[in-house]
Amino acid sequence: AKDAGRNRSVMFQPSMRSELEQRIELLRDVRAGIAAGEFVLFYQPVVDVREGGVAGFEALMRWAHPEQGILAPARFMPAFEDQDLSLKLGDVAFESALRQMRDWIEAGVAFGRVAVNISAAQFRSGRLAEEIQERLARWNVPCDRLTIEVTENVYMGWGSDLVSDTVRRLHDAGVMIALDDFGTGYASLANLRQFPIDRLKIDKSFVQNAEDEAIVKAVITLGSSMGMKVVAEGVEDEAQLEKLIAYGCDQVQGYHFGRPMPADEVPGFLAGFKS
Ligand code: C2E
Ligand code: CA
Ligand code: CA
Ligand code: CA
Image (tube, rainbow, N blue to C red; front, side, top):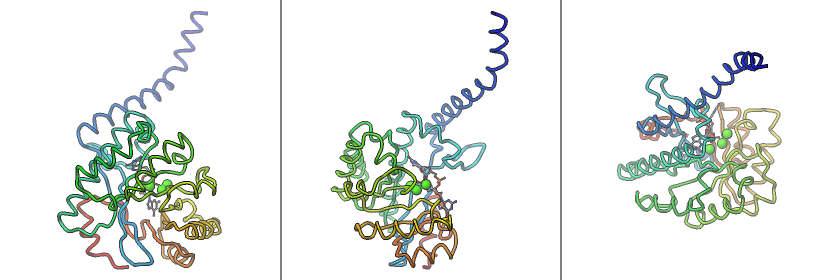
């Protein structure tokens, strides 16, 4: 029996261990990368198709890895799922976005608003609204230059009262609230009325799938009739753009207009932007 146990462990442990080890190693590398300042924000333009200009930018996390180059979140997702690391990345996101906004304001760069993505872990302290307001004050950035993006599942799922209380306080202070990835989770239409949502972001999976046209159309109609602006993600070509405009979509974001770019490319992008 002892031998069988040993054999079994010899046969099954290596692969299991390597998966676990890989995860531990990744989390350790991320922790070291955060300490070394390797996590940076890229900025993707959001275009207002009614007014014809750049309404703002979404801040998206990138790992400027010393050996592997610029990595998107898909390459370090376990870090966003780890409570401690996701709080640390949240700090990095806010501090870098606010420092950047301060620099742009001082340099006269007309960046509009910056949208920062929030993870579930960041709500847990119960102090997120105060923390964000303190940071805005510390960097001397007006509340109305900031949007926070909360995914539908974070919003509706975990600790819903805490989340809605937090976003309401931020909304009342002038921070714009965007409901991200709308349609992919389990928000009900009644939820939409209960929460102070300024922006409804249609997930790119709907925008890019021609069979989902009716859904896209319905979401735009719904959002508009409830007084929200509707933002479509993942717009890659002219045909998608034209349909969205025809349906009355307010804002669009996607490779058709611009990929997420390093902060220092933003002023040049704005200068060269033609709608
Ligand atoms: P998301 O918030 O839904 O962000 C939109 C994603 O769509 C981004 O992926 C963006 O690069 C991508 N995208 C934009 N336009 C197009 C397009 O035309 N075509 C295609 N194929 N993709 C497009 P990205 O940057 O890889 O980020 C993935 C996800 O990681 C984000 O999805 C968000 O959930 C998460 N994330 C990124 N940065 C942060 C952060 O600072 N904090 C938190 N909590 N989550 C973040
Ligand atoms: Ca987002
Ligand atoms: Ca999204
Ligand atoms: Ca998404």
